[in-house]
Image (cartoon, rainbow, N blue to C red; front, side):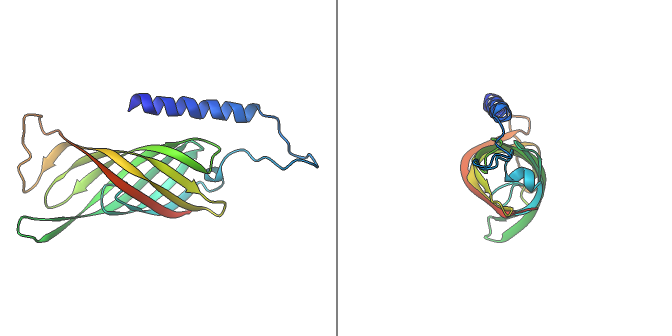
Length: 188
């Protein structure tokens, strides 16, 4: 994870340096105008719905802020549902936040994100940290869509509730799996 994050950061710095070193064509009668940055810089904040994404849940409502052209911070609420052993549906929610790293100056870009959520449900209450990777697009009008996978989900400490989560790991539970996720919204 650290290697991937550092590699993406180094790549984004290199791309930023190259774009800043390029000559400007502004004011040239025969050349198109070049504008630095992506649509993320024109639309710094936004709201979006998430499906199986941050914060943990099958449906989430999020606020995003593009701190830089390569870093988005987010916070949100998620809805959870699970079936108990008697086939009764139980509902819960999560509150969380995180960050995404993207390649600057691109409107369609791969991303890697790390989110943490506090989960409150009848089955378990605790912290969940999720790593997500995917591709996102921010349109010239602010429309935003992103899709990807969450290849690793870790439940970290604080597990409590109706089920007994005690084990030899001191309350740290790790679950491996791959979940698809989708984000749709608008930035302004």
